[in-house]
Image 1 (spheres, chains in turn cyan, blue):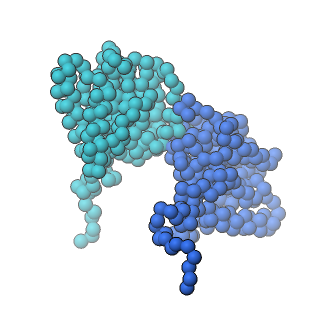
Image 2: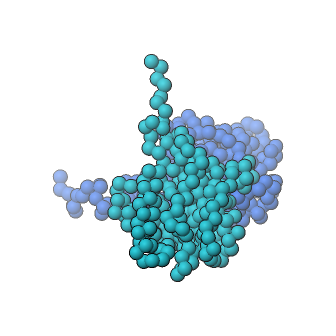
Image 3: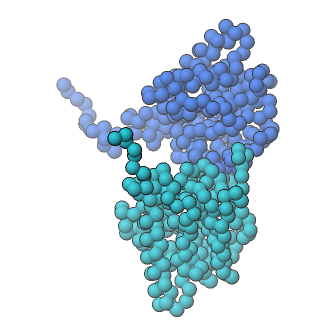
Length: 216
Length: 226
């Protein structure tokens, strides 16, 4: 039998290859992600939204193993619902991030997912937390996923404190576009979520509307 | 046989890295074409494992008067290849009775890197100026491919600056803009990559000749997150 290799999506683990980013501005946060889910070399979903709601004004961005990341997000969503009923008001972003961190740290040997938690609460305004491998740290912005390596230089150079909402949204779109161009595991469309005191706004930017660069 | 001192296993933590790790130019290297010449740049760190064997390395190596190469990968491999190519080019240029083409130099690098691809670990950028095509940059990555590009980065630190390069390079930059682009990109990569660091060495190659400069640690371009 002439060896026809079995399709990779039957045997390879499904990963959200990914580029994710979250950035804080005065009064809220912007989260962004690509939309590619790969199993080996196959793209099994090209329009997946990796920005998952944990609560009305708290979202998380998923990267790493798709199953692990989704499960952590669902568990924390449930725990946050219970917690917010107990305290009788909207939960703090730090609480959500701590719940994610607790799971990531306790099961760090078994899990391989990295979630960035970002949102707005009345006490501290917009906040971004990174929870890589079970640590918890608040940062002005955070990038993650395989595509993030290619844009560290760009975000280091372009980030400035005190950017406004529109500037942050453009910054996120530019970063995602650059990463998607260089990383084979990131691509598709760009999803954006903007959270501030007035509400949560979800946006999609289709492939042909993304910014292009000198060699395209 | 009498032995002085205690014999400990090579895997023990007390045995320093540099006695067993290969010397590698961890590295970030970059080359940009402009109308009239090229700008090349590199960091200056050479590591053996976690030990920095040389913190002021010169990774911009002359292979002919107006043709240089930027070396990344194994320090020994790249030095040996550069010496071989430098010899071959010298000979070729005497036969031709005129300066060799940059494309010729790039092909000589590619020939060595491809033939011995299983044994070598070398990623090289060849850049220079010749009368026929002006400033040119050729990329010879690990494996021995050859491709000409207007702007190229290489080495372990290069992954972190692909995004920066894509967004900041435009065709038609002049010499000073290219120098600034290279200095910024190298500085950003050196901040993020543990195997890159030290000082930035830059050189411009054009019809007028080769002009070298160094940017010391405290004079590196600064960004808000540093």
